[in-house]
Length: 271
Image (cartoon, rainbow, N blue to C red; front, side, top):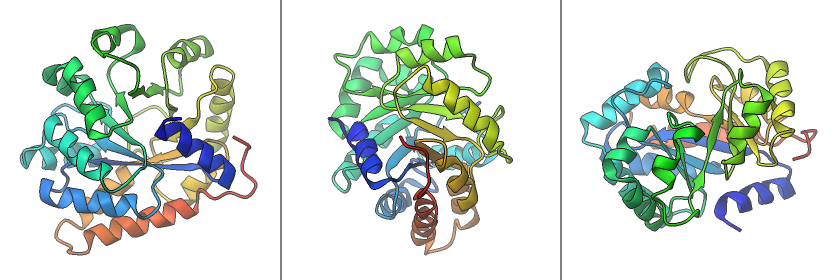
């Protein structure tokens, strides 16, 4: 059993939902990024999404766009992200998902990326702008299937398309809570619940919901209907608001702890 499957199985037994935390590798700078991420991993995250900065992050909202700009300014690139992944693997056994656009992987080389990502200890990859129909360009160069391919499903996706996307997915499904970009406000929990029920008819993979989740109440609401909750912009806004604060790592760790408590729902839906 791989680390992703094991994590969801353990959470089922504990009657908890997964807290999936996105953070841009190299933000606010490469030297401080590792200590911040390490503190978050030790404070309640169940799965880490490690963001690979890209100069044209079209799916990301302002907070994550600015975090990518800070990281790029400090010299982050995919190779450096893999180095951070390797260092984190020595500190934690939690699943690490590399969250990227296709361009950095293409420039690095898909074959080399697969080999080096596994060697660093990554468990999966989510490529934002690579739909199933175009994924063979990348996966045909992989030497195996040990790296989970996390798929995004939009709230407007019809059932037939959901099934097509889920067929080539592994690890878990990332269900986008609403149209728009990351960090946008407002959640319609009933609509999300309906989308999850529809998606469950198309896949047996765990379903994690992201976009627009920024408070503990949001986490609790989504955790009551999904298998996991993905948070990114809320963490990046904290970094941005505390760029010169020497306690930045502790601030992020405390927020992770607050969100994790909200995933422990007594009357949650059975996974």
